[in-house]
Amino acid sequence: MTHSVRILLKSPKFLIGAIATLLMLALVVIYPLVNKSDPFEMKALAFQPPGSGLPLGSDNFGRDLFLELVYGIRTSVAVGLIAGLCATAIGLIIGLASGYVGGWIDNVLTAVTNMFIVIPSFIILILVSVSVNSRSSLVVALIIGLTSWPWTARAVRAQTVSLRNRDHVNLAKISGHSTPRIIAFEILPYIASYVVMAFILQVASGILAEASISMLGLGPYNTISLGIMMNWALVFEAPVSGAWWAFIPAAFAIAVITFSLYMMNTGMDEIFNPKIRS
Amino acid sequence: MNAYTKYFVKKSGWYLATLLVALVLNFLLPRLIEGNPVSTIASQVSQGMTDSDSIKKVYENFMKEFGIDKPLIVQFGIYLKHLFMGDLGTSFGLYPRKVSDILASAVPWTVGLQLPAILVGWILGNVLGAVAAYRKGLFDKVLFPAALFINSIPFFTLAIMMLYLFGITLKWFPISGGYDFQMAPHFSLEFIGSVIRHHTLPFLSIVLVTIGGQAIGMREMSIYELNADYVLYSKLLGIRDSRVARYVFKNAMLPQITGLALSLGTMVGGSLICEIVFSYPGIGTWLFTAIRQLDYPLISGCTLLIALTVLLANFTIEMIYGIVDPRIKAAQMEEN
Image 1: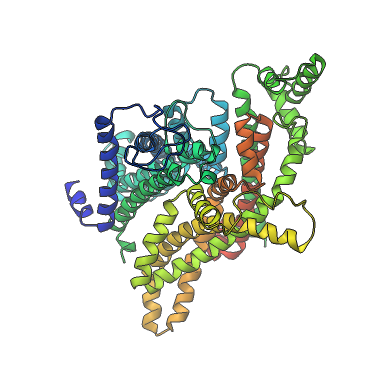
Image 2: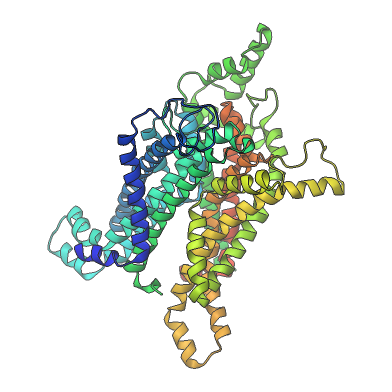
């Protein structure tokens, strides 16, 4: 474990991604401790350009956009993490079950996975969000997690199938170890690096999914996320008013977060799959 | 051809089952809204109507459409029957317009925008990715991070940035709509010019994002293939580089076709949001309006249409793929 971490720290791509993510997280954790005002508080006229008191100007309600941005990143990252955790866990369980157990369970689970890969998850996301009346950010995160597991399930299944008949697994079987034990000690360690990478990608796509769905006006209530900020900017016609500060920083924040997560993933990919190292 | 027929029948069966699941989801989820959806909805629609007769008419109309008093399975039957007759119900927000009429007016815009944009983005992305993998060096060092960055920008973010930069600040392109609002759609050079000018920005923003994702995928596939043993062997045999490159890219290309099929759903979803940013008169913009007005029939009409299109496109790609890819052909033969 410490060995893999040491190798990882030598990859510039992983380092850039990790440092950018950590800096961003530090900002959104520390800034609210320094500036304790309520992000929903109106402080100025609508669409004031960035100036001394307001580092990123004000939005359509006259609220401090920088403070909103900080809280927005916090919500978006939290939603992404919960969604990613949920999606990875479901994908891992389904993938392991169908890959290791095999038989009719494999057939059923593979069929379900293939179906949900083809039906756009974006559509299911819209349909579920429309039907759920009170959406907290936790509910939105869970909905995203519940609709985005199929990719992970498919990949985990493929890897498990290739591991299932290796000698060390057969040895464990002959020694009379129980199935959960074999999965935990003989299978999981071999796919651990893949699962971590899948988790990072799921977090990034969770953040993007939250942004898209909030942009449509189906985001969580009573909170600020990056997607909700974009939705406000669009609904209140910030682009036409020339108020670039109402949407460019939020858009840029989404891009930077997902970019740094992708960078981490690519860095890890190059380390754990030596074949694509060029 | 026998093996292929078998493949065709098997795949068709799976797609029919998937279609059924999509239909059930589309039917069931909006009906999970708590309470009697008809009264909730009818009270919203009839807000501001004073004539009790017309309120009653609205209520009865939706009651009949939903068949709310019957058991769920009968409701599903009614839903399927209406669907086969091309009847998607009546819009709440634009009562009494039919959902199918609204969608029919939006489809040409969406297809005209997305189909060329996704295809152009896919082709350009694959060419760039392949060249980056092959050339390596500076080209790769510049292209790869740039593609990665563009790929991590959500569709709508890029769209909104382009809208601000080229539409509002530089005023090169119009910022909303599918054509100049004072024009009526008719067949003239002027009108076509207007449509093209409105088409440019949303088109470019979809193309750019698609290029990013595809270039990354193609680069990875090509590097993987370039490291394969057969490449080294062909080189040792003295086969010309350009010919080896052709083998490599043919092999790297095939997974990219499946990739296109599988990421189509995401791409279509992203492009729909692009439409919203540019107020392009397509399905995405209608979906946005419908969600703001809680217009359930229109929402489920849009989602159903998108799901169907993505399924159909996937099916077509898999069918073609079955003919093109020798590996799938071999698998078909083995099964026989």
